Image 1: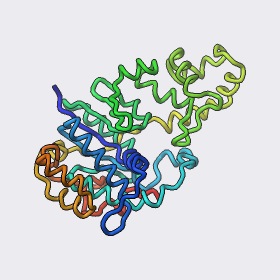
Image 2: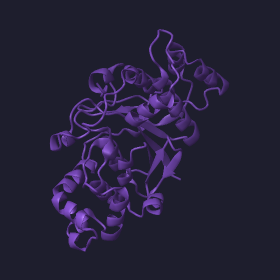
Image 3: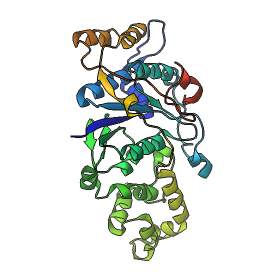
Image 4: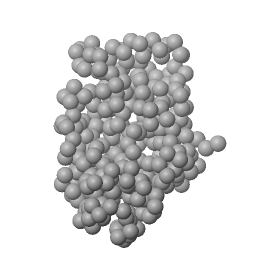
Length: 319
């Protein structure tokens, strides 16, 4: 049985935590803490229930990526991050660091691309890779070795689940979204083609290029017209959705290895944040669900670890 390597989508879980807990929670010094508390509970639940041998958390950075260069409107439809969530991001980093879980972020790359690069690197090793995210783009990474855990829904997705529910293979995920677009990232797709139609087209024709070369055989004059008029837009969407894995990213398995150990640093942080319930839970369970990793490491060009607030300068604060 291969060991489990969990890759946590930090951006996705920060937002989930913020909107999941609507109660006004603050630290003893008055800082908002609902997202911090929610993120911590989600992380605890993952560690407790799935017992991964390895864990890393991946965050976005504030810098533009190749997608912004290719398409100026990429993610332009997103609303500004709520100020209360933005203020909690540095505290969430502190939580991850208190667990001694490595944080990955790299200038010029989205977290999704870093996850893709990690998956490519880890595919050479005898591990089961679990991506913890609610991002449907990640389905393109599914393989016999890779699964997706959607914490929001509490479900594990593998390539068999994808085929059973959508009738497509992982390598077809990008082409479906290239036709339907992705409103969350402002990826345009082809007007008039929604997810259901996109699935039907890819199920029948197999790929985006096959669809575009078979327009005369596709039903509906308006659909044919849009496919002709917006074929370049579909190809652009394909480029935006396809994850980039050719990143020379370092992985030190020992640095990511987990161990159930007493964690005084985490206790101190829980006291600082006023998370008395979490602190009591630690004592009650004798720390047997808490994990820490071995020493951090850093490689030039990557933010695997730095001084205690490395994230403030480089990581995306959603301003």
